[in-house]
Length: 407
Image 1: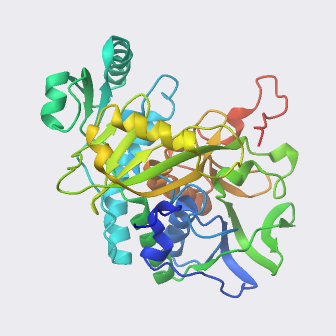
Image 2 (image 1 turned 30 degrees about the vertical axis):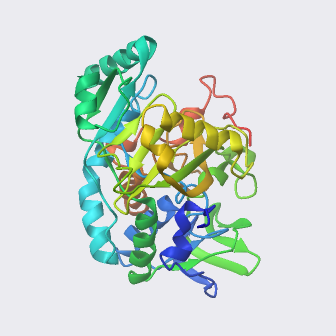
């Protein structure tokens, strides 16, 4: 019997990521706090401009959300009521992904399994069809590429689905990547660009010079820097580095996921599949990722029987073949979620640059976020498409205190 991995398909073991415990330098042009997808993307881009960059990671690279994600680049499937502000940024970032992909693969020598088959959003039964019609109408009004399909048309594209699939929406421009490979590629690209990655080292405090952030204090010494960037994901709302007046309204939303091993006998999917309960993403190595629960429970880690049951039952409801697929891995992670589910990309009054709160769109928004932070560091402003995502949007209309999310 093969063992079931309890981390995202054993990335560190299977792909050869080794621990990084380099000596802490005394000075770096830029220090990035957080070694996840967003932090490493920013570090890689800034190092490419010839700057010395150090990344501090409190645990291991990708430990928060980055290795627990599905890797969907799906602005059309994600578009729902209340996300009108986010849609232009999501579409902008999707357009940046091919250039980001090519540069990352060239810099790292790693193929990140970028796939462009699109997404199928499914409905079963009359109630779900009505809700799906509402979503399709919203997509059409917003100018999103989305095609309505009858049940027979859906099953023609995905013959392994159950006959009870009643209707669907095909989002042809949606794409996906393999998070394991993206993170491996980012680590290699960062190292090739001279970025120093230090794991298992938390940032305990920020140092200041003239009221502006000038470095990070750790239990292994102080690292001075011209620019300090906070990209700590779900931990961004935790106390310690920021005063209450500058607190970030970010909290963890737990997600549990699993990977199934497909075979020639079980078959696999050709597209990403979304239902009201789950999503499924086929990967190039033959695994099928099923995700993800949404649990507002703080930093309560671990995989539960209830979470796995919900995922498997949701998958089995539309794809009967999952019953014959071997469970390859199960895991949980914490999405960094702001009060309005959109990212925070800004320079705070104390000079600290923040890039966090990406909720379930971290992979989709990585290229635009990295470009925006580079622009912030170099020019002090962000591109027009990012200007609605500053911290000031959470201020009360009466100029009262900012909202703080509970941990």
